[in-house]
Image (cartoon, rainbow, N blue to C red; front, top):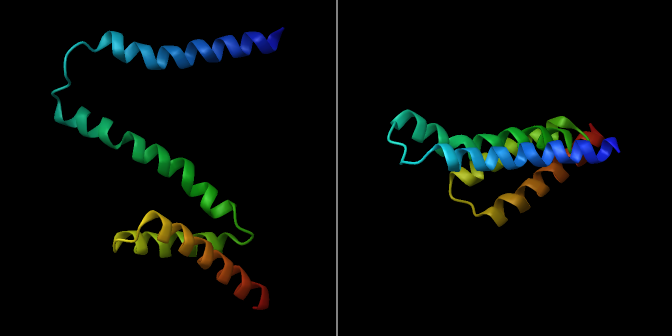
Length: 102
């Protein structure tokens, strides 16, 4: 019975988070600070969820850090998402392979 109560509370919380902004904000947001804040929220949320997984998903955390640094550089210089993903896998593979022998 408690499980259904937990599910109901989470459903209401999720629904409220999505509906309240639609009902409370009637006119466009003109404040530059709030607009820029809301613009960057999805990127920051994605980064916060992704960064720990990058470091902890590998056998050696250093391999994940090296892959992160390498792929930031590849993306910075115009690498596509596919190139970045494949290079990340390659960097982790080589780093962990080298770390086993050292």
